[in-house]
Image: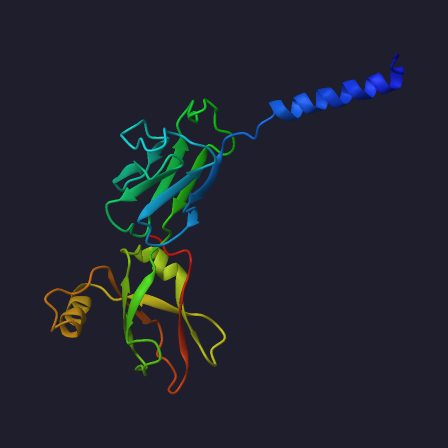
Length: 227
């Protein structure tokens, strides 16, 4: 039986489409990389690939999938054939920037080159306040000196620029001064006299003017504070 020309064309198009569907496969990629952006207290990086990268069950040492640029040491390991982790030796302090770049020519177990972003990065950001003396909600003196326990030492110039007090009834920001030298040492010795050693990364600040009596005061810790 002779097949009409238009019907033959339709059969050919359908056949070619089926072959294309069979040949096309989604590219291999990194499904997830954590952490990214600015994040505190990082202890581990975890990466999940879309396909097997090593033989299942074979978790012996193999070439690391990333070139790592980071000032903090750690150890890499495969959890399974798709999940790779990098464990840092300690919780990362503030001021750390890390970059993980996919190793050139990295292939999956099936021989696919990875597609998608080649570089992943994160930062632990600037120093953050862990505790304060006086504690939040406590009464304060008009000339109060505040002891701030940070997660890393802060650059004094950035503190003076980005830290201030918001005081009810005062429209403008109230700037701070850093308490240093013998005055700082004397206060720390007194406040932590029952401790074997005072905490690390202590910052002492005081407002540049006295607070009005019976007024709410809020300490504003700006994002621009650096280590």
